[in-house]
Structure formats: C-alpha cells, structure tokens
Image (cartoon, rainbow, N blue to C red; front, side, top):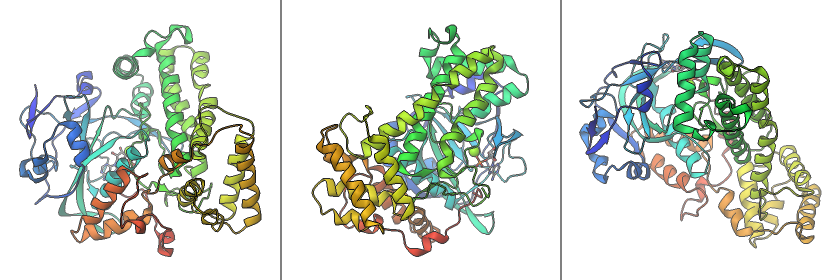
Length: 490
Ligand code: AMP
Ligand code: MG
C-alpha cells in the first residue's frame, strides 16, 4: 500500500517488511495548533516536494502527527543497548515513529509525536530547544561533509512539556536511508532470537552492504565482513568528528548507526577553545564521552556489535579479526583529515613529519586554550596571503607558535608535500553550530521569531562560504557561552 503526501508517493519502509518482532504499529498523539518552526528547502527539493509545501496546512498537521495519511501505518522499532558502559536492556523508539519512505528509498520519522510501547515512563515528546538543535546540527554535519541523518523540518505547538522547567512541544521530521542502530543487533542477540538476528543482518547486508555477501574475506562469512564494513564507516565518521571538533555527547550503542551516520543529536557540542578532555554532556560526570575518548568509545561500541553478531558469525576469531582494521583505519582517517586541514596535496598519503606537526599544534592549542574553529580558519586565511599575525596573536606562547610555523613551512620548503592553500578554505569551516549560536536562536524561537534559526541553517548548510553581514556568527563565543549546560534532558 502507498500513500500520497502533498503530491509525493510514500511507501511503507523496507524495514517494515521484517515483521512484527522488529517493530510495533503505533499512532501519533496530536498536538494542538501546530506551527512551522523551520523547514529545509534543500532537502525538500531532493525528496520532490514542491515549494508550496512551505504553506501547506495539511502537511503541517501530518508532520506534527495530527493526521496520518490513508495507507500509512506508523511504527516504532524495538532495540536495546549499552548506556554509559552498562547493559540497559530493552529501549526502543520511545518517541520516534517511522511513517514511510520516499521514492528514493529514504525513510522518514517523526521524533516527539507521542508515546509508544517503548516510552518506558517517558512522555514521548521532544521540546522545542532540543528539536531546533537536532534540526540545525544534522544539517550542519551534512554541510561539513560528515555522514548523518538529516532533518526536513521542525513543527511546534504551545502544548506544555515538563523537563527541568516547563517547555513547549516540537516534532522533528528526520530522514535517513535507515535508522537501524547497533542496539537492534544487541536486542535480538541478548534475547537469543538468533533467527531474527540473522534476518536483520541479511537485511542490512542486502540493502546497504551488498559487497559483504560475496566477500572472499573472513572465509566468505558475510557477517564478519559486515562487522568490518561497519567498523570502517564508523572510523571514517569519528575521524571527521575529531577533525572538526565535534563531541557527540551520548555515544551509547543505541545511538550508533549501522550505516556509520551521526545519529541522535542530544547534548552534542562543537569545541570552542581546544580542550581534548572536554565533556559536553552535563550528565556525563565521569567523562566517558569526552572529546578525546570518542575514538576508543566507538571501538568499544563496535566490540558490542561484534559480540551481538557472534551467534551468526559463529567464530570468535573471525569476529575479533573483523574488528582489527578499525585500529589502523581510524588513525589513518584522522591523519587524512588533518593533512587536509593543513592544506597538503594528496592528503590520504602519509609523509615523514606529518604526525609530529599535528601533535605539536594540538598541544599548543590545548595549552593556550585557542579557539579550535577560528584557529583553522585563520590559518587558512594566512596561507592564502593574510598576515601571519592573524593566527599568531591567538597564542600566548608566541615563540612556540613561531617554532611550529617554522616546522610547517620547512615541510613545505623541502617540497615533501605541495600546499593547496585554496583548498584550506574549502576544508576549514567558517561556521559551526557553537552552543551559544544555537542558544541565541532558541531564545528567539521561544518568542516565535524563527529568523535566527533560518539564518543559521543557511550558513551551516554551506559553512565554508563567506556571507555578507554574518561576521557575528563566525567570531569568538561570548563569555556567557561557558556557562551553558547541556544535559541529556530533551
Ligand atoms: P536518547 O538518550 O535520546 O538516545 O534516548 C534513550 C532512550 O530513551 C530511547 O529509547 C528513547 O526513545 C527514549 N526516550 C528519550 N526521551 C524520551 C521521552 N521523552 N519519552 C519517551 N522515550 C524517551
Ligand atoms: Mg537515542
């Protein structure tokens, strides 16, 4: 059965064909008097929505969960997972429901449209604040070239939602080729549902990793090949997070995408001053998900996935072997990112002195608490002809910076690698979604002024470009930014 939404055809998700062990039919719960908060015209065009959707009342109601088009059966998926290092048991889509997929195979979900059988005492709602953050950040990541789920729009309602304080409700429409998490595999494995585990793994291989089916690696075992393939995508994703200074904040296994996409935006943060130990999640008192822990946590999560797949890989040695490539893929991917930021031609090729160059600057950035995004952007400007003082003045220890600059130019002078300065401006963003920028936009949105969200969306979707009169979005954060506390509460 298919349905029509504003003239486009919606199909049941491929995932829904897996059957009732994997999901439960649900109905969204209506919200009074919905309004548009923000809309993503670029993504709408990709899906095939014409521009009239921006003012379509029926679509507004549908994407708030007030109306389910005939022919669609919303579902919530079941999964389990490890949270903060502990087995948490069954979780599931407690406030997300899948509506269907577009012609191009992209699925879409409403997040915050009410309770499901997996709500576990939660209210099934999302607040305006966290919904705007998810909307803007997923588009920012996409703009940065980092694999992510995306967001089509946020709708709001003045219905009250209780968190630490009284807030108002919102619904994010998010899209992805699939929302399958490591936690789905853990769920079926932990519950000894090995037929379903195999069914899920076959589904993922056939739809997203077909090359694993006939791989000669791992004695022709497609599930071991899948584990390696997921590890490599995860390595690539985390390397890009580290290079851009992104902290996810809640890298629980239920928030890890089987496609290596950044998923479930909660207390995330882009670093302001460079601090490798930075903890962005106020709830994470032990710093399990600190910025510099992310690469190892990803590996720990992949290990959980490997354990979950063991009943169908059927060979512990093979599973362990499939996890091994992460250990070289991550550092290699990270160094490729850093060589790209430094402007070297052929950035995927290592050369002598590259690692030392990166480690030295990271040490200096941390020591002098230099703003991470501004440093790289200013360095790009300097290599494109601006005065070196632009970046030199960011350091307290100028002598140490001068020595590093000498190291950098020495590598260039020796022609060990050619520099492509123009590419630096294409790889070191001018705009990232700093916490305070999100906070300012949210404050205005609470007063029903959504213009700042719109402006940020424009800048973040193409964050390497220059925009007239937008310098205020590209400067140092104000002092009050340090006091913003972001928790899991959303
Ligand atoms: P998160 O920390 O957002 O990844 O959520 C962890 C789990 O809690 C998932 O199963 C969510 O669906 C569920 N959850 C989070 N917030 C709510 C809520 N307000 N109502 C119901 N379930 C929720
Ligand atoms: Mg989650």
